[in-house]
Length: 368
Image (cartoon, rainbow, N blue to C red; front, side):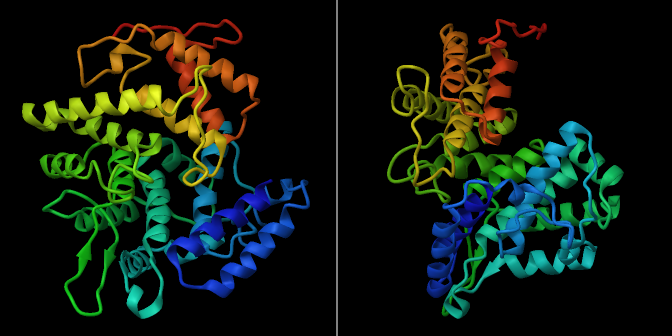
């Protein structure tokens, strides 16, 4: 149901980030109509007109988001895209890149009713994969026509990211102009996670990042860890990976507070977010698919070393029940026929951690 999925995502964006109510009404009607047709494989194909993905998106940044998902799949299969990436023209040059980023970094909601945070996050996440993930960078350089991912382009993007990072908090986030007041620089957990993750932790101001992350604990996502007043495995994973990447760069007092918080997140994950048969409870107010609920639950447990003691950066405690839970989750996913992209990614992490429990193939352990 790719077409309906795209329409649903754009409806959510219109609702949460704009004041375009008439446009939202029309988009909801189009979503409702699309659900009548279950043959939607056409909506997964690359456009022959401009080389984009996501034909049911009207917003350009959502097409960029769809593109990076498609590129990851094609890179795994080592196949070239069929058409040049002409739709990437707005950011295909260094000047175009910097102009777009500077324009989207600051929202003027009082003036135009548009929060640019989602567009900024989607495009910078895609750019960071393109520039800093070696397999994606190599794929662009080998296969993609209509986009020159040069060393100069990457350096310009990196310099812009460094300038965007706030020196006091260590965080990245959308900026907001007020009608009468100073510029507000938000502390955005998700945008910060992406900048740290895709740069493999090679960022500045780690003590500030750690302190800000700890201070955001009881805030509401994206400016905190919680959603609807409780924890959430997506945000738990973001927090855990930030802590893991910066662990060696902070002192013992920061470790102690983080250690306590990770233990609480683990308890919540195992005892609140999961079912007795190894399933993860979907939160339809947050996730776009059931597979996403599994992906982020698995990713959190994997990141903190619950399945593999060699990855356990935050405690000397071992979790002997981890491998058995890893297998239980696999069997639950198979029983429920979860096979979308995010479910597949979750299964890859599970198999890497404890082997294929369904077929009986065990993970090949290496010496750490």
